[in-house]
Picture 1: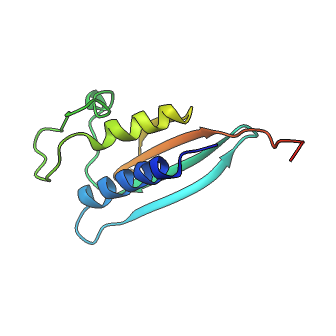
Picture 2: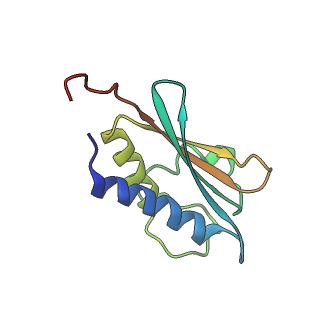
Length: 118
């Protein structure tokens, strides 16, 4: 029950940002897992500069860019990701990476029970 093209755009935008903002020869990790019985999680980890806590709520706004960023971009990528997540009933979060370096973007998608008539 998902829009494959939009989900592809969501994943591409998250991975593109992770690569773009990681350190030279850095690492980007993509993980998918089931969380409990009712959702799955797509997580994109990078080793780029941490996004300041006070900026985290605004990064999903259209045209918002972090000050001091030298990378090209329009500030639309994460806004698009957020909109696609919402269209799929998902939520997106941003946390500091578990090893203390970088960021982790997680998208939590609801799982639908299997259709017994199928």
